[in-house]
Image 1 (tube, rainbow, N blue to C red):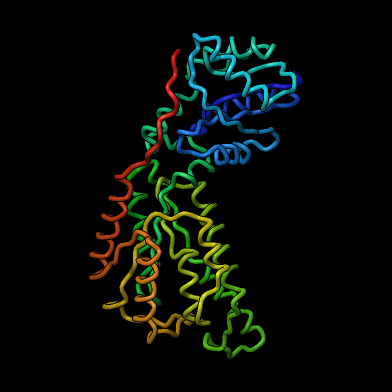
Image 2: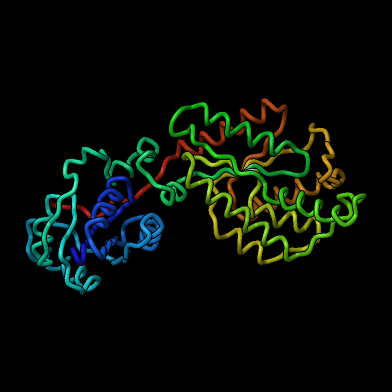
Length: 356
């Protein structure tokens, strides 16, 4: 077929949608996917278009706002919808691909053939309504872009040698032990540490006796560190569970800039604002011995850093919990806080009502 069309809300996209699109793409020289979103829905049109473009390279994905209620029995309502559809897709359409009973009428109005794909949803027993009601129960039907958008991101942060890395690993292990989809829980390491290791190695290639105290940072390096941290999170979130555990984040990079260079770099804040996190777990250094692993020299700054993290979290309105006590007590408090976050669920606005 020359030009095929797939049309829907994709609120959000799921395995059934992807099967429909991929089947249509194999049968058409050109395929257009039209995403129709209403203003009342809580996932933006731009996000849905971006997610489908990422999952379906080679397919033309476009969007349209459609605030007309659905009534399959009202010709005037059909006319109003078709005005929106044909404005978005003015080219001739040879085939309309759907998994819906209304596909015959939709295809007729486009002057196209109707190709039905998995009408009974036997292959992928899922719907947008089901996903919105319980994303966790339908996690297996969601592809990377949607998982990344729905994942609850938890950040463990704190001053040097306060147990952040150990705690982040332990939290991830707790959730992995809960079975699917939690078994997919990802841990995102601190990119700043990798950057520091490489920086020290490069210094020692020139001066074999160089120590960490000889390393010199520039302000321009910190936005790069923050951006790489974001990129690592995005990759992990596309592969993981409904929760993602991060050992620091781009927000914390701004405090590390203060620690090494003093003052702020607005570029770091801009990078941090590009990604959303949901909960910060702040580890207290008190009661945790300082261990110099070759990349630390700030034992005397731990109290200052803890206070700066706490102040900045509070003043920017970020949701955070302070963790104190023994290692076991900190882990228990952390898991309780994350469970509380997850128990709040995902709130999706209802789409416009439909009459079928």
